[in-house]
Image (tube, rainbow, N blue to C red; front, top):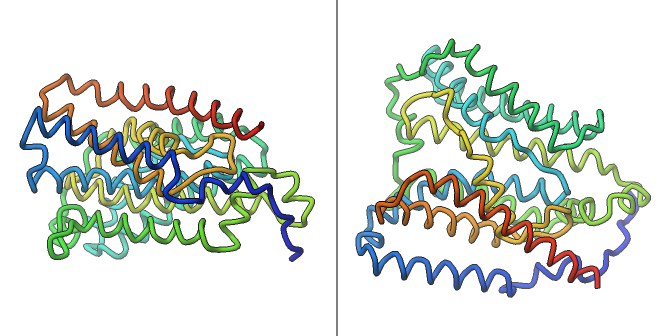
Length: 326
């Protein structure tokens, strides 16, 4: 395989940590936590912190894969619908076989397959990722009702499945451990491997990657499948937390994931992004959500906030791109 030509140094400026963008996010997070703690002292109770971390874990798992995908200049809007379908499939297999292993394998096979189809639609059929994954989202939203016949799947009696979402290893919730493991894998891949360098290069300048002899389509396909597998893990954790497979689960989940990734500094144009920034973006959004609940505000704001964040973060991305262009 021929070596990849070096990219301009500015493309990798975001790798220097702590960067200014990450520092701003840290300061915002610290200020937000302080303000909420003053208004509602129960915010920093142990039980509430565990609840925040558990919610962060679900978003971080999928956001890790989504960061990799957006770095390649693609996107997947079907992750919310896919997570709901995954939970229903996992619960159906669990009820039929009483095996958590088989349920997890079925869930990962389905979600990975969805990612593969999304990737093929984008790379082979040349359908815009935004349009293609919206189409997949609609297929999954309708398909899950056909699969479940509009019924909630919730008949299992397996303690191991309950532990997947509600269990602990020492004082740490199981979902948090799984999220950190997946986060670490994606972080090391993007930061320290040749594959990660190629993924950044595809988003920065796909034409140059192709001219260097690399298959950019395969790299993007890989990112779609990884995102799908992350959705499979998150979908099973969500089903475990609800103790049911619900066709309506995951509505709006894709907005939260994408908002966290963009807020963390990953460019929608590809080629730039920091997984540590994504982690901070997830923490910010989930602390906001928790603050809305604890302060007794209208919970519909939990959908308003990610939407506003996407608009603001996208505008900041435009400004960053202009700055990098000069």
